[in-house]
Image (cartoon, rainbow, N blue to C red; front, side, top):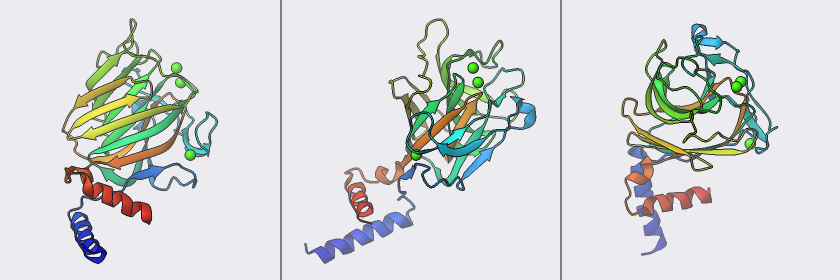
Length: 261
Ligand SMILES: [Ca+2]
Ligand SMILES: [Ca+2]
Ligand SMILES: [Ca+2]
């Protein structure tokens, strides 16, 4: 087939995919432009916080070994007031909403407290999260029975107690199996969300999975609890464009076209 015909067929295919709303480009955020305009700081109501901060999200030059400029939160804000559920500073990326995707991010933590990812974020009272903590909080009477250290997945269900419903947990008390993350070092997280199945994996292989279909899509972001941490190289790869192409040919072609831009 001559090139012009191939090109025409390709154009038809790409146009069809655009009209079907199935083509989403990968998002890569390295913070080097110093711009947080696409991000929104989400505040917990003051009555939800034991230390109300305020949260101090900013872009700074890395002090913990990440790459150039990073997203950093420096307050020790935390909640809830009786310390029975991990709550704290949230920031979400408002550039695009995501349904099925793979998210990767580099992280470096100054402290031993809570940090994680939120997704399918529709509002403060409707989202999922994965969160880990090396310290013993919440203590002494966690609402879901899970005191730190742990890695867990939750569903946000309300803006008052109990706030979150437990989906899955990797407990760390009495010898594990939770393993503390390394403070002050470069960490790397991967979260895959596909058809209501969630799998989160750390650079050391520790992982957690859960299923829920209450919230189909929304924004992605970061949540902290009494933690000062840097984030960099946030990469979100939508999965829906490849789902309609079992042979993988269109995604290969699409990648080639993107590369040539
Ligand atoms: Ca950077
Ligand atoms: Ca601590
Ligand atoms: Ca702390």
